[in-house]
Length: 472
Ligand SMILES: Nc1ncnc2c1ncn2[C@@H]1O[C@H](COP(=O)(O)OP(=O)(O)OP(=O)(O)O)[C@@H](O)[C@H]1O
Ligand SMILES: [Mg+2]
Image (cartoon, rainbow, N blue to C red; front, side, top):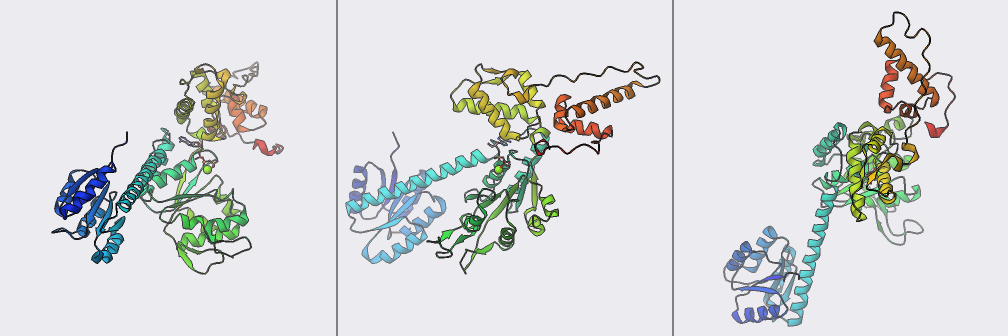
């Protein structure tokens, strides 16, 4: 059963006090009735109340004084002012100070019960809202972002440092690396956490709509503008705007965004009034913005405005230490959601996941785990349960060593290097110089192969025909 709402009644007139308390008790509330402000304040200090009903004129501490204590120390407690005809003006002032409403004496029973119910409902909704916000803060704090690898720890460290500030953050990283998650963590760990977080996917909204989406428009600004519309920048006031896929924005819009970033001010489309906003800007892209600047496709000045604090999220293949943790996290999450017994990866299956280059990064891993939870029958996931692309390729057939191998006078180190060089060349040829494929053939990760190629001074032969786009 829900606990009864607690009401504190402060009224110096004994008969009024008795009568009001009686009505409220009949309505099922827990009522404490006191005769003056000081006693009321003392009771508030002792235990929490959902609502305070107070007369304005009291001996000693007045109803107004009590209200200012409430606003300062117990802002969640609602307050209804009881007022005689002569003090109606004061009750308006009380509302300005933060009272929920006022009731004129003599108090009408129905009016009283209705107003009390409304005030308590209002408080309940406010608390519910606060609870949901807290839940969101927990969900998008760091608790749900997995990353034990050194590069991710560095990302977290940086995010922790900049979350507190109002600086613009530019999140860079391949698709599926967790840019949006980091943007949310930044907002929900910042002083703006109780304000809105407004995401805008610049790539998903058609260009002709994007401007009105961002800046809003005045009624009649264009044919279909039948009413005034508030844009995303205005909605984000007091909070954070997250400009996702920032590279996919037209040059005209880039200019307009630049102005908002510089001045925190803009006009709605068709409007003349300059609107000022207090916002924090977080932007993200999976493209190489610097290259786009060089190619003249992204404004240099906008790039510098955005690139105040760059946060680079490394691709999953460069933080293989996170793969087992992420896989376990997603498996337990999906099993819990489907109310299934927990599934685990066999060491051999995990080995295959560690070798895989993960072009779709964490999102690809997440999707794979979901699929395995649904499709895999046993509670241990084995190599055979993984899709084709994870299966080890047949080993490279080693070329027969030449008859004079190792050649006369060659040291062991040189012989090993020579052998390694030939193996790498063979794998590269076999995979048409697609390094990630060659790396798979050699059971290496791509970066190790590239390092080895550098050491061995192996470069792609200049006459190699261009590869079809999907291989690059
Ligand atoms: N470190 C992590 N821990 C837990 N889940 C993660 C992590 N990184 C990413 N994810 C999950 O992977 C999915 C993709 O993440 P997100 O949408 O943040 O990536 P993105 O970089 O914004 O991708 P895109 O560039 O495609 O928009 C999400 O479901 C997210 O919850
Ligand atoms: Mg994203």
